Length: 229
Length: 402
Ligand SMILES: Nc1ncnc2c1ncn2[C@@H]1O[C@H](COP(=O)(O)OP(=O)(O)O)[C@@H](O)[C@H]1O
Ligand SMILES: [Mg+2]
Image (cartoon, rainbow over all chains, first blue to last red; front, side, top):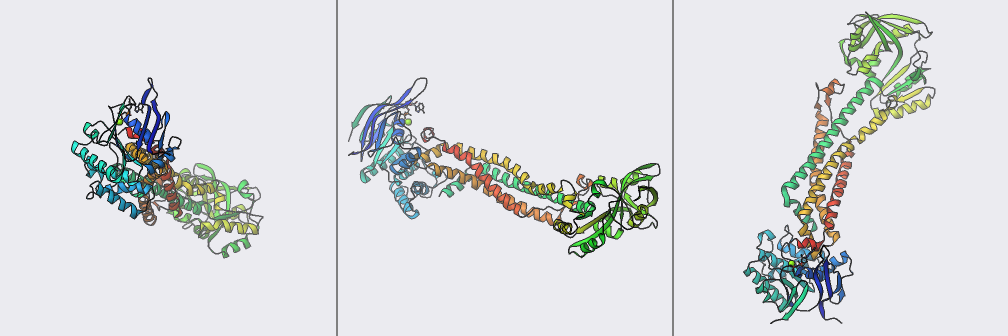
């Protein structure tokens, strides 16, 4: 009945305080399968809050979120963790990886938590790392990798669990422009060739240019929603 | 892989982990060794106490110990003594006359407990002869020899061969006295003993008391102290008209003390562990707080609370379990070594207090097992708080710190 991967209805998040902060303010949003969408807006406009709500990392003050038609707001904490594990891939700005594990082990780790057998998860992890161009770095630890390489491992890790979509909160914020483009290329290719849905936030104009749909936030509200080619 | 992560996490802060591992190892080692030392020292003290003062078990008239009346002799001792002698594991039997008396030396007199003994038999049972360092055990004086301590010799101003007068009440209630000459002087390093007990030949005291060969006390020494209880009970069953008590019931508090000695180790180790517990908790708490973002990230991408909890618990247990065995092996090795070789504490305050000059460390083997279980318990206990702290993390907030 529902063709949307993500649907937010009248979504709000208020941080109470001396002055309440309406970080996300009555947002309605639908994301379809195969989208490659950027959430943009100045710092403090609510990008992280919105992505955290969609990713089930935070609970909305009001409104609801549906992922593939399933309500996620009435799940318990543990159900929510399990839901994230099975349905959502995450790429954060930094600290994506376990420092004591190699690129390969980091990618495998998420499949371990899904109880996928060793042989299978190793094979998939190698495939994914090859896809993000790190076939040579399987056994490197995060500290032995550049920032760009680390983010590519994070993308491989995010895909390892075969999620419904990938959420990436400013994945390029800590990267130089070459690495940023490189990461975007990989994400775009995965979107095109493998049909993986990406929803990412950024305030880097050159990254915005690569998105096929750009949603602009200001003070927790969507001020524009543009599809570009 | 969770094990791998936990293991590698331990070595992220190598110095901090090493410090805590070494602390655990040294703490356990010191605790176990110190208690083995004390247990060894106390056991030797108890052994010598049993030998010198109490013997393994004693036979009395049921009222004798309370009332100390000279007329409470042991009825029909012959068959009983014969029976005891035939028993396997009996090292010696000494029949004694025991009487409260007044002793007078040149210019000084005072109260004492006079033991009338057969010198050879008494030597086997109490070994008091080995404490003589001046004169000899009933040798060198033909008529009425007496053996007493240096403390008493000083008190009564007597030397070897000096004369002392012993005044007692005989079996008829008459006051009677005889003079004795000092044959030997001992020093047991046990002032209460030295200040109270003087020894004469049983035949001499018998003549003075008019006891006609009867005795007040039968002291029995065995090869194995453990046999004292069953053997005493056995004879007590046959001779219900007498009081037959093993060593642990002859000295008030002894049973309690022995029981405490066995649990002593656990108290020492327990206290050390308590201190270690807080250090481990502190270390792990630091490790968790340092990794707030990482743990938040793991929870964000789908690591459930059970797994996060297990990871921290596993890490804590591993950390503890590296130091634990090291400490226990060191303890086991050194306790065994010094259990054979002994530690010389001669000339120290201990020796002056009447403790043995050489202490042989000792520990019941099962102690190691129990301490191992205690270490595991400590590891689990130490893990809980930091692991719970990790669970309280809110992933979205932890991630925001990125
Ligand atoms: N935990 C919080 N408590 C209070 N206010 C918060 C909290 N997190 C975010 N905010 C506020 O919510 C608004 C949106 O923040 P955020 O979603 O981080 O924006 P962006 O990611 O676009 O920079 C900001 O004004 C921010 O200060
Ligand atoms: Mg943000």
